[in-house]
Length: 415
Length: 108
Image (cartoon, rainbow over all chains, first blue to last red):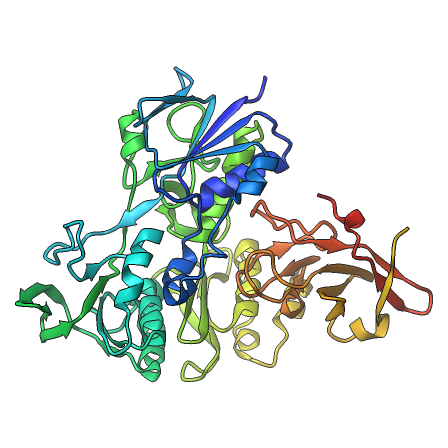
């Protein structure tokens, strides 16, 4: 079997960048074309809600620098949208009327911010309500996070926390409106959500829980967020209420879609020689107990590397614990794996303290095994959890809970 | 001709198995893994974190900031399509560790 001679990577984010780099590092010497619909060259998104939002420093954003692309013969086409992928015709059709030859395609079209009805922000002009997904979004929002300004954030999730942190750093007064009893309850459970709430309050955020947003009202020049507990006046409103996968290209190409582009454990879609990776891909995950679409940088990287290798004719699968991080209020938060309801939690350190790790342990017929971990400034512990989750084992609860115990030594003894 | 720079002694790596050293403007993380000394650029290729503050697990260097896992010999970041610069290391009989800034030892 001969390998591909023309690979098209659709999307201008992390997954396309990793795929391009992986293809070249694995010795593939055919054509590589990246098709990005944004006006920017491929960039990474994590800094958009962190240092890029705070300071506008774009130096760390670029994923495929021009010099690297020139050296590696990777063509990047920006500001153009892919309309249809056809492996039968061997091409990707673009919205400028042209088409690009392709005998393998990676769909890495990502996701867009979920729009919350009733907020406005549907007009192109600035009306004070913002979403944050793209570099352009961050550039529009940054000047509104001004000293003395009142910033109201809808949603107490990770993006909400990071935007709150950036707004505080820029001198704004920040209110976060969370519909649930604690932020992040769905992601990490009530006790850890409460610990995250304490971080926000300690930093000076006016976090209001059990506060459902009903809409945004404009009264003259005033912007009022209407909630179940009254109105909150704002100079800028930021909604961080999730994301929606960009599945249109796949659907229009006759590729199976169901809450994401459906792929198998090798990142293959239902169409021959078309792969998908990153936020748009929905993949079976034994660790998560079923099909899952993951909106994290690390998952995009790993899926894209797997997809690229399979494009080149390898047969590699992806089943690694899902991992993400958030930087907020001077702390680094990291989460790995998937806890099931009923898993027990073992805490290393004190949840009232400045650094802690919560390990989740599930019982099964084969014995206890670690399923997930969430840490505040505990990246080392997350590295340990990654190994334990992958090994489908755990350590004794009293060792995990003992901050003096060397978990790296304990885990190497297991192997 | 490779230029070697004496940067540490083996005993500096005995206890914690890792340390940071500098040669000119370059900060290098040294790791002792199963009796072999490896040298990698200290600043993580992904973000400005120090690898010398990372951990060693099953022969790989783990950067705790973002959990990237590096092969200490090649610098390859597992599943990331990127490489941490690595440097040639020489250990003399008296335990003196020297590194070279030449990239001759880098695989890619």
